[in-house]
Image (cartoon, rainbow, N blue to C red; front, side, top):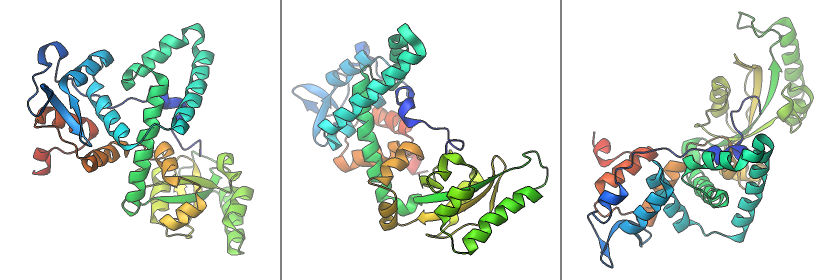
Length: 327
């Protein structure tokens, strides 16, 4: 649904920006001054899965990355590494992605591609493209697992649609024109005759990006913000196998929508090997922080009494602090 979406996950990997936070601790003035547990005489900043990160390790890396998002980047990396091993499959996928991204940069920026790539990567907290892509795969896997666990809450589903475009986008009335109504009736007549939705979509849908696939949009949920609001609302209201009435979108035209799957069993049957990974890569990019924090708690995150660091990371990830939870 290319005309609907503001997405190109693959190409945009290198320009994705982690949420930024203020660096509360400056290396040369605060190193070694964090209160809490000590390991081998050094203060521990935090511990995940019983693996301690000392102040010197934290600040040396912070100093090297030299970015306002360094604390958050390190924290996310610690969670991902503690949860998912770096397999050869992950390495190979990262290498292929990096090769394609570099080729795109070369085509776009010529001899200056390396400087541009490094500049774009600076916002991620990484200087090595493949290393960043490895971590991103891990975060996506964690987020996909979280989405599966919260299936009903997120209202995850796969939908297909048929689009009848506006004859006159500037038509001031909310009613279809005669021409639009005729095209909509052709769709309704074939569906009423028992024709398969995918077949009708292939024949009549005027969005060629999906009509070739029988109208399949993909896996969406309630957080999907890249879809037309009327389309999303109608999609979330459907039960499995149910077809909507015509939904008017002020941007595109009229949509007829079917919910192919609204249960886990059906979704995993019709939507491929990992529909949850497809969801978090393409349609719901809001879940990663929630998923990472949930995993950190599962692993036994412990900031060793360093409330300021804990609150700054929570704020950056959109997680409520204890004071906010008690309000």
